[in-house]
Every structure is written in C-alpha cells, then in structure tokens.
Length: 235
Ligand code: SF4
Image (cartoon, rainbow, N blue to C red; front, side, top):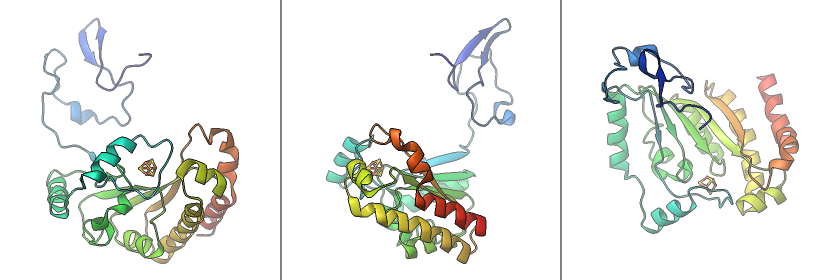
C-alpha cells in the first residue's frame, strides 16, 4: 500500500498512533479519550455520522460495469428486498442514533424501491436527518421528482450519466430509449427544484468505464449538461 488507510496504525517514536492521512472528514472529538496504547481498536461506542442504505436489488438498467450484477441477480431471484415495515424501523433507529445523513443508493436503483416514493416511507415524513439519493435517473419521472424534492428531507439527488449519445448509452446500459428519458428527467428535475423551492442539490455524476472514458470531453460538454448549467445560471 502506498498510503495508509483510515484505520492503519503507524509506528512513531511515542509508540503506536492512529493515522489520519486518509480520513475524509476529521472530527477530533470522536477520538477524544482514545488510547493509542491500548490493544483494543474499538474502545468507545459512537453513533455513525452517516449511513448508506441499499433497499433494493431491482434496477431498470443493465450496465456492463455493474459491480452488483451477480448479487442483484441472486437477490432478485429470491425477492430479497427490505420489507417496508423493517425499513420504517430502521429509519426510526437511525433517528434515535442521531445519525446526521443517510445515503440511499444501490444495490439496484433506489427509485425502483416502491416504498421509497410511492409509500412515502422516507420522503413523506419529517426526518431528523438529511437524505442523499443516488439514482440512474430512469425512474425520476416528474411526479417522482416533485415528491422527493418537495419533501424537504433531501440534501441532494445525484444522477449518473454515462454517455452523450443514445448509441453509447445503449452499448453501456443496454437500452437506447432510456438515454432520452434520463436526459428529460434531469432537465425536468432542475425545473421542478425551482418550482417547489427545494434547497436540495440536483446534480449529475459522470461514471467512467472502459467503454466511455475516451469520450469524457464529449460527455462533459454535451447539450444536456450545458442546459443544466444554463438553468443553474438562470435560477
Ligand atoms: S444502474 Fe447501478 S445497479 Fe443498475 S445496472 Fe447500472 S450499475 Fe448496476
């Protein structure tokens, strides 16, 4: 390893100490009282600051690079999905633990988890934490975007973009028509954000893989993303 990981102990003249070189966000008080001379790695019980939930293995895309492919396939075959009642208990537990933020991601695609939007398991409630939602954008229809953005619980929605043309999208994700759907959904979500006066950040992330890395410049500057920035400039 070239660098130390978050939990790596490094040697120093004073003895063992915890390396913090790779820590993303350092909260000194979380290490208060931590003895570097103890052999116990876990010395205190602290609530997590943020938690990632992957409620469903279902997904409407079929990406070549999907690292969850086999796991999703098995879970879908066995219909393994968090039951709504358990999901509600989990959310209540996270509130009790005073968790600050919850990321909802895949797994599959969170918007394929019916309970999330249709049953309003999270978005219909007044929560003690903020939510970050990661989605491929295919199911982010206008009514869904309105529900999640108007809920007041969302810190951000992050939509993955893999291509600047429907041809490349089809090659990577399997379905040509979805390209136009995602494009339209992003544009509409940005408009809806203004309409419902949401503070949530509607953003896109470009996912690079073997099939698209050489088109990075084109993906970065393609029409839809230009429009996104234009809308941001206007609002
Ligand atoms: S959108 Fe995500 S979960 Fe769905 S196939 Fe692609 S990488 Fe896998």
